[in-house]
Image (cartoon, rainbow over all chains, first blue to last red; front, side, top):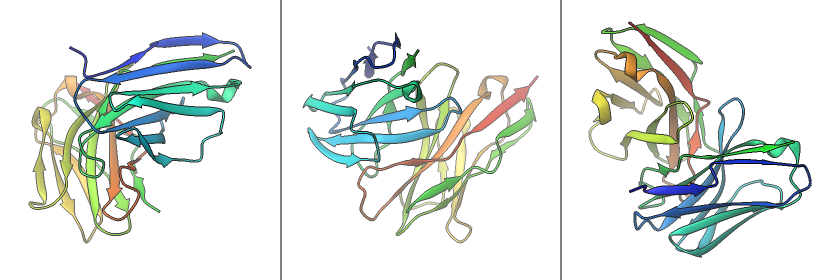
Length: 113
Length: 115
């Protein structure tokens, strides 16, 4: 029974397209996150939601828009995809925003051609 | 601003030998510190954390880490390495002040354990 699940696992698309990645957690956590891991494996936080409220919004192009319909779901929509958006996107959740460890999904590998 | 440094891109050890993966941090206020492991094509998995209390923290798979406030370090250790410990290890920090939930990750250290 997967705790944090993301779909799709792989996404290959053309520049200029719009795509979405979905994330669901069944851990009952209040806080969810999106992280980006680039080709050098560096991890950067993008967004965080606590009980459907946006609490972290890093310097991310406004082509990226998160949506949290409820506290168990956090989706990521990307408009007008660019080559530099190619990366692995990880969804994560935590019981408590400050002291709780992160539970990660398996990642969604986005390739923009 | 908060930051994490993992000074070694790569650590190589022989199976059965002790291992250390280094981490130093910079943060306003007091730190919350975490270690995660990532196997190829997988998400990160939590190993251990320091929040408060005893400076020596024990975690999953026999790993432990020691919080050293004066040296602003949180090195990951294991007394006897296994080949299956080979993976990418990340140290992360959060501050007790503001930015609730914002974890800053180090650049990662690739651990290779040779038989």
